[in-house]
Length: 160
Image (cartoon, rainbow, N blue to C red; front, side, top):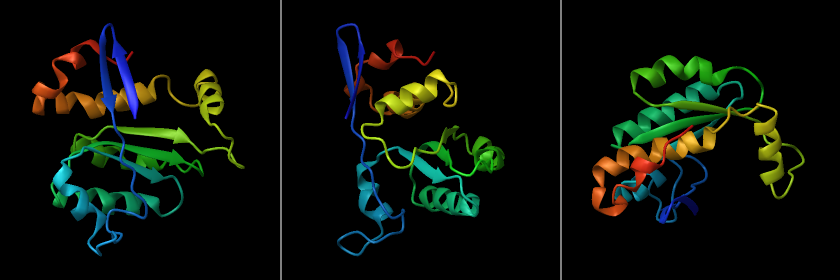
């Protein structure tokens, strides 16, 4: 859960992470995308920057759109510096989906990752405020859809 605070107001974001892909079977055997559809959650699609992932990312986008999902953002982890996000930008723009890229996570994993993220932002390897921009991208459309839940709070939270 992520908390965003502005003055006396607090907005919470709960993230539901799935594994295996949108068409991977759930415990019931149904596709994960079909199981979670009733929750009407906005999707932040995280794709890989490896060779072949442009096609995989596009297939997932199409699958989610066909099921009626709102894709709030696409985030590509540029593991191999192939520029996958650049290759996806024309399609993302035509679908009005913002795209973000992030460097590969360190190996072996550093736990916790907070110091690594701070160092990446300080070195400008992660564009400043990308996480804030993604949060804003997720929340803004939902403020229009669910005003009784946000109480106008999102008018005070804007990316830098």
